Amino acid sequence: MNSEQPIIVGLDIGTTKIACIAGRKNEYGKLEILGFGRANSNGVKHGQVLNIDETIKAIRAALDNCYASNPNLDISEVYVGIAGHHIKSLQTRGDIVRHDNNEEITQREIDQLVADQYKTYIPAGDQIIDVIPQEFTVDNFQNIPNPIGYGGVKVGANFHIITGDKNAIRNINRAVEKSNLQTKDLVLQPLASSSAVMGHEDMEAGVAIVDIGGGTTDLAVFYEGILKHTAVIPFGGENITNDIKTGLGVLKTQAEQMKVQFGSALANEAKANAFITIPGLRGMPAKEISVKNLANIIQARMSEIMDFVTYHLKQVGLDNRMLNGGIVLTGGGSQLKHLIQLTEYVTGLNARIGFPTEHLAGGHIDELAKPTYSTCIGLILKGYDDYEHHRKQFESSFRKVEIPDALRQAQVVEEKADVAESVAAEKVKQRKGMKDFWGKFKDGLIDLFKEEEDKAL
Image 1 (tube, rainbow, N blue to C red):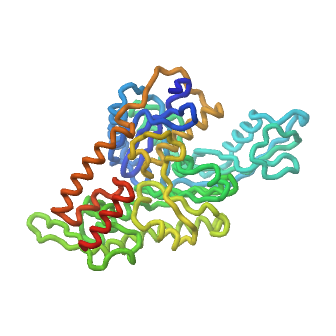
Image 2 (cartoon, one colour):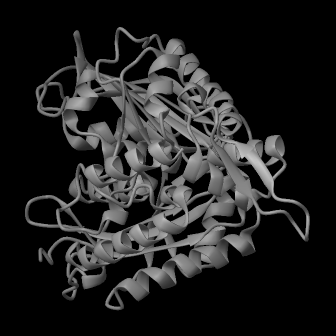
Image 3 (cartoon, one colour):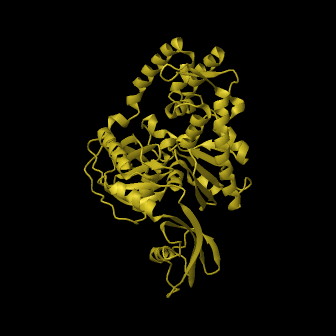
């Protein structure tokens, strides 16, 4: 273990779940997960904390689960993600004239440039969450990624400023504090997700990260290594579930289950003669739901979300000729079947699923590699970025904390075998039950069962 490195904790306060993950970088610069807990979220709607008491309960439950996974942890400070449709962004420009132009430009002058941007006028009731330098200029030299070491009279930069509603920010901080934690920093969720699923090459090629969460879809666009645009689209997986509930007249839990097990983002890919049987309520007759109708509802809402993505890309002039890295889909909603095809069809860009394994050390449990945890793992990486650039104070002397067995890969191999056997047994009893286990098996196994199911249908 590299015990000189601090343990950093990410807290993702989402609309459907709250995740708490503790990690530390190893000697190879990869993230080792030392604790992991999650809980269902009740007090959050569209990414905003509305019921503080419910949110505190959920944070404490996630924290308790994190301690249960590793009792040696001691968590007091957390990096917290923020989203919600109150988030806005604007572009600004800042310059300083240097007193001694014979000296090299230092980090202190860059910090001064950034600090000056916090004085930017923004509407009353809003607050600056983050100031991100884009490209620098030194005298007549343009598009400098890092001006430290240059000499010149005037140094300036373009900035991307992210703002949010003061009350929404206060609610998050209050919920965290009342859970006996301290907010080390608030990080915009699409930026956290981006750092988890993206490498340096992606940023150079030009890429749009689309994080489909429960309450919102978060967007971050990078081009030539620079953050060009961020946006929060006020629709997510929860909206799809509500559409299914209303459109098909089922309970919310049933709608969610159908979406996950049988849902598809492309109606043309759904079988016209396949039906799902929903048990009737209190003696009412059972209901037959068409898989095609289910897919139609999902496709309508997903197309709307992707239309928003296309709109934002056009706004910043980064249409399909510019983003060679295409679209990276992440977040819980990215696991919908045929979503890649729909995204490519609507946006005209190549698409792929972004898994938060880019910076993770090997040997972790499969659960942590799900796109659902991209934001949380990205929050830890943001903490390390602060640590490595000396932006914040961190304790660096820690007692030794090992990776618990519960979070190691070896633990899961036997479980997988058990699950596989139970699936085989279930197959005999219920031919459509297979989809309950979607995502738990290696590709070959999935294909094998899929073929069997296709024959059955």
